[in-house]
Image (tube, rainbow, N blue to C red; front, side, top):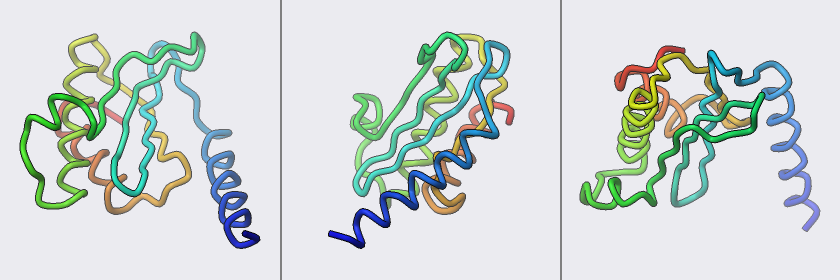
Length: 122
């Protein structure tokens, strides 16, 4: 139990360190990424108003309808392209990337790559 709470504290510390440097405005909202063991979620948030403009995850109908992915990194790449397409539909092209305390490699990097190739600029 002690190790788990230490891990949780370290994760929250990293998250706070990242979040104090970035903020989503109306002109440049924040692309937030959350990764669990099975799924990955991405949402575009305007912090000044507290609204979520666009979101995508591996639980979406469109992602589920795509078929089976080879691995979780490939699924994250698809989610990045999906959230980018939904943001472009709402006329958002520039965002600030929030890795949410996660290391920038693997699935988090794949979301960023997919979003860039989908048309988002960050």
